[in-house]
Amino acid sequence: MEEDKKIYIGNLEYSVSETDLKKAFEQKGIAVKEVRIITDRFTGKSKGFGFAEFDSEEETQKAIDALNGQELNGRALRVSKARKMQPRLSRRDHSDSQRERFRR
Image (cartoon, rainbow, N blue to C red; front, top):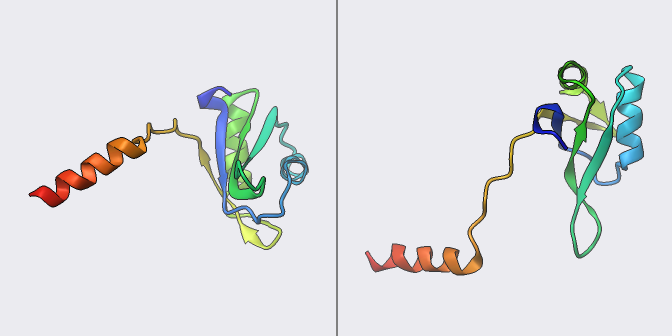
């Protein structure tokens, strides 16, 4: 997915499917290229957020304006431009930094 044409969709009700999300865009007259709801890798259940990609930056902004704050299955959506994922500390790095904090 291209970053400038990608949006974050949060506060999704856990039963919302990718098809439901696509329909929400289509009802607003917005053509979506790809929709992906993020799921837990072990249970397969939704984590309550996802991403969508569009063909143009104009469609991307139109989608943000049309759906941010709108209700879907009883929950107000939070829609914004997607940001690049920040690198995470490994467990080892995290435990080392915790140990260092307590040595002071």
